[in-house]
Length: 409
Ligand SMILES: *Cc1c(COP(=O)(O)O)cnc(C)c1O
Image 1 (cartoon, rainbow, N blue to C red):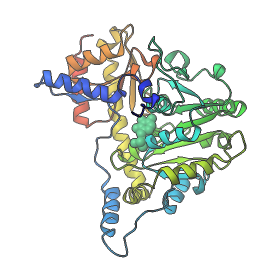
Image 2: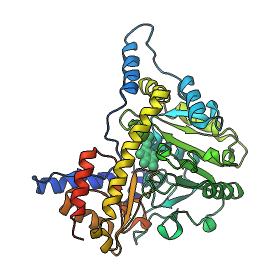
Image 3: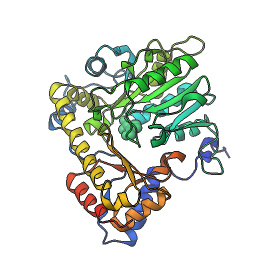
Image 4: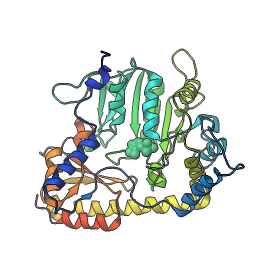
């Protein structure tokens, strides 16, 4: 019989979110009376902007007419949308030829791994969004899990904790490493300053590293001094790929639309163009984002669409403030819980000293009927932390906060 891809046998446990869902289901089955509220998975909950939805609906109806019908489009994305992204979001910092529209950031991250193959050295922020590591394991760029549970062989973990202001110590990163960086960060919420990002870019340029910059939460940045794209930083074009998405700002988690910026200046060691290979990946392994979703993306970048996206993000940020207020309550503080919320991302990150993340997860599920996400699922340095997500209906967030405020720790 054909043998299994060793990358799969190397993967431990489940992917984090299915495991969270499994525990929730199991708890619900045993406690049918519990009204469970999720502050767990990073999924949007609020309805689409009617303006953006109408653009998709009009486009879909147009497909039923001879004039409006279109089949496959350009695999790189509609020219109009690529140009609109370049103008509206990059304002001259990236050209349309460097922007590739896709079915989402996560999908692009997994395709990026085919671009660098299994011999690349990988470093991740720890904690990190799981696909950077799990995807690396699947393509063989990382080995099996270490026995002590401290991550995978072949992945270089860069702890980002309150102790180092959530900024990685780069001094031990080897040359020619693929560096996964996410800002505003999932799960910690930490958002890099221009000075921090400049340090990172300078390091990458000096050491032959490529940064995969996940900016899926750029729209949550409210502090105007913080960079919304890595291309605001001098030198980024020779060392960075930016992955981005309409999922979180426009509520497109189900619609599916993202993009990746691969600068023309970015080169492999042999001098060949990364942009050209990415074009090859997109044209051979991908067949273009949905044309309906792209019509929605164009609408999202119009004046009305941008204003609707801002309102949606503001709603979630307010949820985040309510959660942060609750975690600042006396019951949490007296138990030594310290929480972090930057106001520039949707997550509140909280440390429960001397406790295991999954234990705290189970306790909050049991006592409050609230689902959270255990920090340890994001990497070894996430142990003892819990991630609270601000994605939720206001009434549910308020109810969850009311229950949390009565929690005896
Ligand atoms: C939600 C999320 C994504 C996923 O984006 P999609 O475009 O929906 O695939 C990517 N990166 C991070 C850090 C996220 O939290």
